[in-house]
Image 1 (cartoon, rainbow, N blue to C red):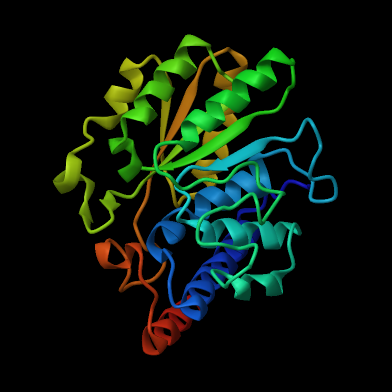
Image 2 (cartoon, rainbow, N blue to C red):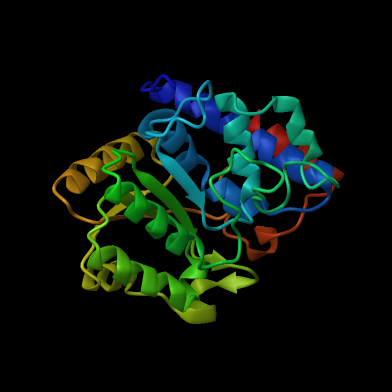
Length: 275
């Protein structure tokens, strides 16, 4: 699809995505707003500026692939897919409903356009590595993008995947970490401290690009830089520093909003803030 380069247009999209996230979770009475809100700018730049994909030809063999490793954050994923034109926007109101395509975690059996089912934390990067290796063996030019949460870095399988990616020099895989410092019911520092995270990732042999995950201009530049490093056969990880619940004052940096829905009063207040 056509690349959006104007930051003003991307800002408008981010606001619409945040409205969708809140409406989906509120309507369903369940879901994960905090991590969806923290990933909003990342997903906006990824799908509307960085990735090669075509809603009119979703099975294009040369399309870039996307894996949502932090699979509980489907509200932002589904909203982006709707605005790209992959699904009707009104279908977002079926989120988490019985028999809906739009389950709480990505379910390929119900939604064939997804690259994979995901949400068992720690497994997404392994899936992405397998896809990237297969594409490389076929000399396919596509890039695989994989979005992880920082909480799932507690899983040993992530670090096994990082070693595998380096071993096979999978420069056609770009891993993105939504580093919002909160997981489940507390901070990552209290639950299992990740720091010094960037140094650990570099110690595995990867090029690590750190960026403010809410700065659209910086994200555009960073994704472009990641591709340039990949062309030099470097394996790249983008470490995005973000805020859980970004954009809604009473949700920001609050573990409570990891996995609950707002009530009517909270929903109305949040939507008012976005307006």
